[in-house]
Length: 263
Ligand SMILES: [Zn+2]
Image 1: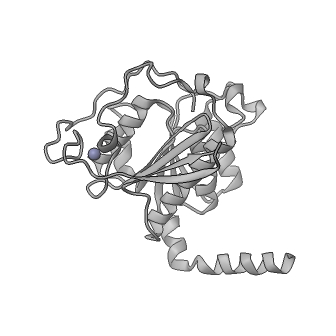
Image 2: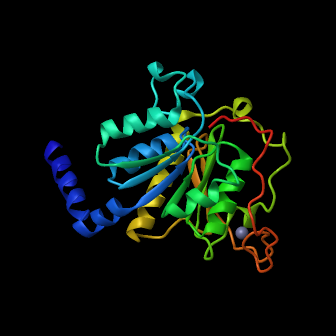
């Protein structure tokens, strides 16, 4: 068994050739939200050798975060997440270059931050923020991985602006405040959040390497209770207010929302 593991490890390392390594090392990936999705994604992207990671997060570490936001530990309580994350990632992977944005994502900073990156991981925890990431990424032309988690279910989809369906193609407007249960009400399984966050990291790496088929025009849904995955076909909506034939959204709209943060 040990020999088999050595051989597998060797094959895996050989497959990652110099050219692929260089592509990953030159890459710049932005992670918006360092919660249950973004924390595991950040760890694995840094471990994979991504050269530059952008980290957007304005919250401090709370005890209720620790079961799923695995960058943080009990001694970090009360400290800014982005600072703790930078310390941990640098200690684990000194080669990674970090660009930290200790600020709430807004219509003002999205146009400045997003174009600096090759790919974006949406690890946000509010419906309004997810629409802001979607709109900002599409308007800036930056591919991104969308995701959401609730209770025992998670979902994710990759958006390639100009080529594939965006979140508004599927849901043109956000649901009214209060219609979607908060994470406190529905609960979050930490390991489930991690599973979806890691899928997002894989999508980012596939994009950088040009490998396989991205999860575009498909919504992947993970039902942990039934232990099943299914994909729902999503078509680009010609009447999408953002990326349709006659878009009505030409600039970013406010992300203000009554949603409670809980990622
Ligand atoms: Zn669209």
